[in-house]
Image (tube, rainbow, N blue to C red; front, side, top):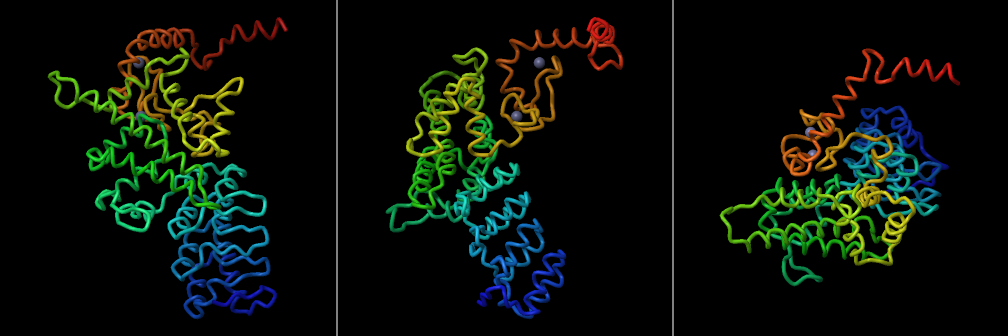
Length: 395
Ligand SMILES: [Zn+2]
Ligand SMILES: [Zn+2]
């Protein structure tokens, strides 16, 4: 590998950076085919071609460089930026993903102590925060399918790797959605105790990496294991019951419990449940844990779901009041309750899960909506023109 100091870039080397600057992947490919060793050169700022391409957010060029063997974790830049730091600044989630799949480390900090996802949060690219923070390499799961130095028996049957991998990468952290996802991966349903155990081990592993500890990941794995624990308990209770129903709908029971009114009448029971979950996080010395507790004990605390979602996904979406499904928190739900039109859902499934509670308020909400639309004058968009004129005259 030739690692030029940049001051003496040859014309051929300069052309590589020019091709990236011009988004010209054809020229770049030709140049690298001719001199493959040039893929990891450094320019005058000690930046690699891959770092330039990541900063430009050009997926095709990043892919070309990775195909040619670009080193994804080079960190010679004077402020310790890696390609993933630059990708986070570009705001392009596809480029972030390409780098992560290629093995980019997400825990490296730059000279001001920020990781790539923290840089993304700093410049407001919240989708990049979510992409980086939820990324799990498949190797991490495969690790548990075999016997090695740290484990004397296999923790996970190999055929579950795919579904577990998808399950742990989910971005929506609403507990009802998580339980719905367990049903989505049918193969997981028969292995819930093993899955819970696996997630606990994964959470612990993230806290035993020394400088590369990942508190966010550790919390997320713990969080998923906690919810699975709740499902296991519901199952056990149901199997102890000796009544007619042979296959109880665990998701419905879980959703009904979580969406019921909580201690604080403005909140669902889910809020108490999640606060308790945070409280039980075993790594109380972490910055992340202290941050969450501080936020929840502030004067006007947000919901526990908001706190959890923010630490895992950044402030994604919450700032702009995106409509969410009343059952599972999914963004931009497609359906509304046809009667009251006041609550929204992803689909019939979500509506069904919310119905035990919504049926109590649907009629009232419908009435409220009808009154509101009766008072509305055509074209006035809800504002009473007469009242407005009066107000302007009086003031
Ligand atoms: Zn939903
Ligand atoms: Zn309704």
